[in-house]
Length: 106
Image (cartoon, rainbow, N blue to C red; front, side, top):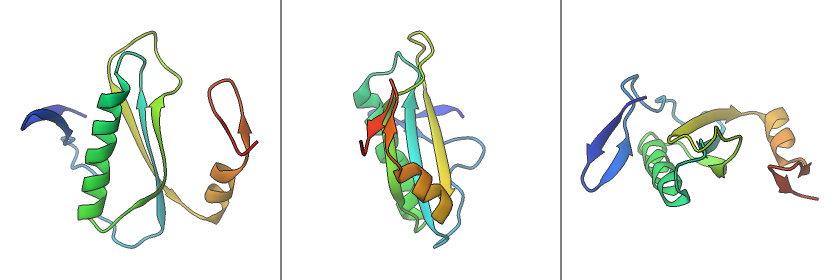
């Protein structure tokens, strides 16, 4: 993925064509994960742009996670994961988690 300047902030516009154009095909999970050296504010800016691109395509992210998870020694950058959820994946995502990096539902 490459970054291009857009106005006063960076915007996600991958050379590979961006977010898939699949309208109305189930829920999505969106993860904007920092690699350790990217401030939370920038991660939320990236996620906001991702949400806008999804909305333009008639898609929504019913689950999301934004933050520095599984970092790489203060490396700058963002990893974006977009997953189409089915019932099984949704149940797994919503299950209680108790690890050093993530905790919810416990």
